Image (cartoon, rainbow, N blue to C red; front, side, top):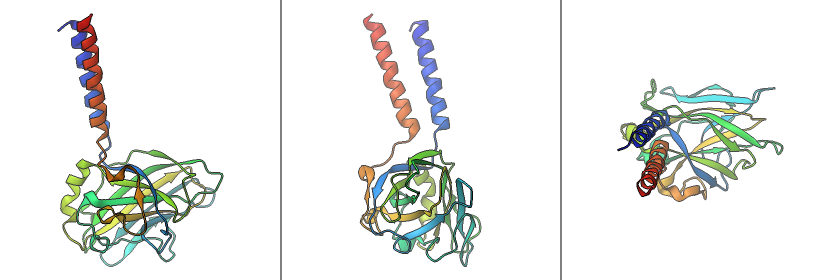
Length: 241
């Protein structure tokens, strides 16, 4: 192996390790979804956010106290604005079948927003500390023109690593779902999040999920695979030379 080839291989390995270390093992975008008839009260709404006056940021949390759903932040108190449904009520028996749908409802002049935090939490029947909390979320710009209550949304799922880590928290049908979220560059709302049992064909409406429900590969896996191909191509060209 030449010195240059050795240096290239070592550099690519270092980059691969850095990518693996920095990748987010959390909720990831599975694709856009077209959900009809999914307004408030028609689906399992978990969290609704409204922008405070003169603010372009919405943030809020819904948790289970052991007796009721409790909220913090920019969450309206109206009927069907938030909830902590049980896994049993959703028919969800595995974290691999759970989807969280983000349905923005922004003004016509809004072009984009950024979902800066989205964290899934699973609570036991008695509340208290969450049995499972998804790892940190990577900020994601989204097209705010794909909007309107009950019309369309962005579908999120857990990565393979998170599914494995969350499995024990999905062992009881009485455990409950909670969420926390932060959205930037918003101009109103309401912007809602609801739960879908993908194994049951979308649940709560006639949903079609982008990507057909295929597993989303880890960002580190995709990056390292690409780096490996680049290294092989470089070495092949040098050997031919």
